[in-house]
Amino acid sequence: MLNLNSVMIGTKQPEVLAAFYEKALGKPADMVDPENGFWGWQLGSGFLGILNHSEMGGKTKDPGRVMINFETTEVKEEFERIKAAGGGVVKEPYSMGEGGGWIATLSDPDGNYFQLMNPMG
Image (cartoon, rainbow, N blue to C red):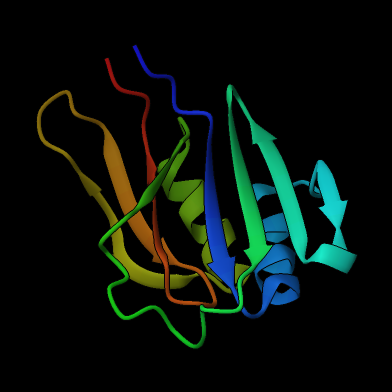
């Protein structure tokens, strides 16, 4: 059985993404190595990393190919907070149907999509 350990986002502007995710996540990075272009956050049992990557440049060409889902009971409030912090609006909060809770989609400065969603189940 596999366990998802971490998600890494490669970029040529790690400082910009790190500053954005510090605001979006509401906390400073737990691991910082600016000399090697790395910032990382422990989020529950998973880890999110921003890494300087020489082969990445500009906005992502397929922003919805991989999406990170952040769980929160306050989707609407967190959406407004992250939007005010510079998150791009992809889809305003909407109901996932009867008993399904709320979901919203935003983007980071590289154009990568991420979602806010209520806990499942």
